[in-house]
Image 1 (cartoon, rainbow, N blue to C red):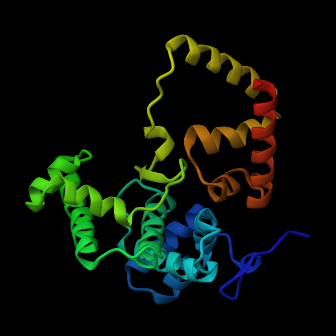
Image 2: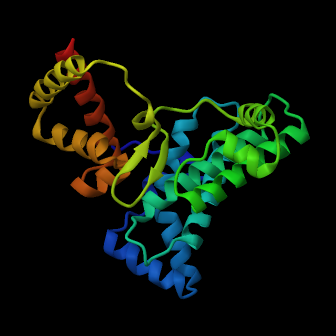
Amino acid sequence: MSSKVVISGINTNELPKLSSEKQAELMQKIKSGDSEARKTFAIANMRLVLSICQKFSGRREAMDDIFQVGCIGLMKAIDNFDTSLNVRFSTYAVPMIVGEIKRFLRDNNSIRVSRSMRDIAYKALKVREQLMRECEYEPKIEDIARRMDVDVRSVAIALDAISDPLSLYEPVHGDGEDTIYLADQVSDNKSGEEKWLEYLNLKDALSKLSAREKEIIKYRYFIGKTQMEVSDEIGISQAQVSRLEKNAIKEIRRNMM
């Protein structure tokens, strides 16, 4: 019997799974104003919301609340998705859902932040987005402070006050091909020789996995797909993908020790 998750009154076992072709068809209808297609599309993508919500488990906020906020992010992603771009919907939707949840968690943070500091922080986030669109690169705090005409220290303190700890596997960018995670942007000070030895050890460890485990590791860690996307890609359940991924990682660690 497959395990089920009931959240906000929704049994995830009863959620439909749609092919890429069906999702594309529904999205065209949504853009034509079909409200039923919008509803069907949203329900089919609630598993994506759930997979993101699980990254925020253990918070003081109820998971039902986080899930509902994630669904708001999903609906925003549906309404703003540009079908003319060569981007998978899930790639576009994940950062929007994560952003909606993080805003909710910031607003409900038990550490009280003054209204003036929150105003500076939220204005800084908007200015950051503007600068990224204009310059097409990540602006420095100095650039943001200069645009706001506020001293750098105030901007840094305000942003730090509303920030939450991040997972190294937090998606920070998706361009339709590969998703970039926070871990990808963390520098590594190891020497070339150390990296080369680690590469050989990893290659040897990967060679000892089963064909299915290799396929899952490739999609998850070399291509950057979510477990739900891998599930759709290779035709097994998300629970099976999760189990095989955990087994593969355990085996890799054992062989690299």
